[in-house]
Image (cartoon, rainbow, N blue to C red):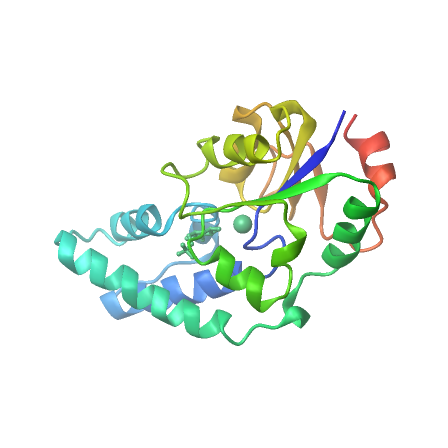
Length: 217
Ligand code: BG6
Ligand code: MG
């Protein structure tokens, strides 16, 4: 029986996935190479330092640790500039209504994000108080597809893993949910998320009870 939702943040609640992509692309361009959308799919759900390692490998660049840390800070500065412009208008379609239905039905919800900027974003868009727990990049040590973030989310909600459903836009995030024994709703396309238990383009018009009874049981 589903008793709680574990939400990824970037690309699920807000479209910050495009900001991450823009900032990583700018960094790669300054280093003299480019990244495309297909490669970017492999960065979704991955921590900042693991992302930069993958990007440098993709660009066939080896840099000293100090320079890598400098670049990660620079990328984050660009990213924070973008998220600091966000308001509740940036919440993705259907999310506010879904949260209202979760609350009305007495279900619990937690955030399960790899981002260290998650609390800042939740504050900016006015959703912080709706979450019963927040597990983010500040409290996990392993990137998705490791299930740590979702296992900690279920623990924080005092639910069994199988009582939680994960909402994700990343292939690695869906792998993480499955590794934790949870079902996963993918926000995206079957092409990007062939591993999802159910694919939606958004939560617009979605009835929570119908979703649980018909699609997730
Ligand atoms: C994830 C994003 O949610 O957070 C990744 O999908 C991002 O693209 C990661 O790299 C870490 O985010 P931050 O904000 O800590 O750099
Ligand atoms: Mg995401």
